[in-house]
Image (cartoon, rainbow, N blue to C red):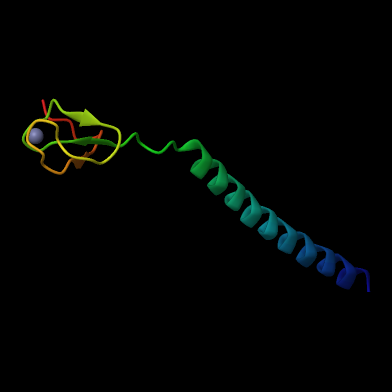
Length: 76
Ligand SMILES: [Zn+2]
């Protein structure tokens, strides 16, 4: 009978550890989401790269619709 109790405890423990792993994954996911700052989106004119705006609008130089500028893709 003692063995059965031991097994039950083992099953319970493994189940608990799986649950703990799951919740820790969820927690880290939440932290990750919180940690990752949304990249600052800037809008620029495709004809005038010097025109930068933090919100969509129109180019003051040519009136063209401003397009999103990806910070990662930097043209040098
Ligand atoms: Zn322009």
